[in-house]
Length: 290
Ligand code: G1P
Image (cartoon, rainbow, N blue to C red; front, side):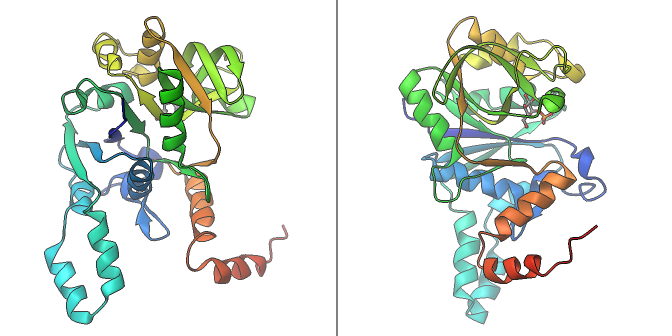
């Protein structure tokens, strides 16, 4: 079945980015000239998805406003004859359907995904955590790679990459059953294990293609690591009923939810932007000695 829908959880407090995120969600922090969440929406659209479901916290309208049309801004750009920017602005509100659901209590990532149950219905869907910025210039978008793996293997698929052993406690870590090329069949998953307890160095990064069965499991999932309802725990439950695969994707992931990761993501995006040549020569000219 075609994957048409994507869920983008965006209801966290963004505490790692305070005070920047005091009044705006972290997903609205810009990367060069677009808010972080727009990269995920564009990745989903480039992967064939035409229905986006964004899970937002109550009382935070900046994300809704961003994907809505803005008639007075459009009129102003039109009057000035800035047709290129007018097109750019219009394109944002023309990504197929963008729907919003509210997560009234911040009970964790699994809970956020569960909020989208009724809008997703009985079909496989993607989940994109937008602060994991996935760049694969010239290649397939990471979500597309996962969708293709899902269609080939007929099960849920999570994006994985090897991480430094010392950093396993920041991620969901998988225990492989068998590995073939980029595909790893998963025996088990652990959310944020200690270095000693980690079953491997294969970390789940923020892209998933899940079967709708996950919602039944999520409804039964208790609070886990950090006192939150974890998506990882629900996927572990799903493995008991259906095969779940890890896909070692092609591309570079930046954790734009941390200050350093956000800085690196900005540099990476800038080096692919219209200003790339000038930016490259600016960086080359910096005195980077200690
Ligand atoms: C979430 C998931 C975790 C995954 C990570 C990837 O954690 O719970 O399994 O490895 O995203 O970025 P968070 O970063 O929200 O704590």
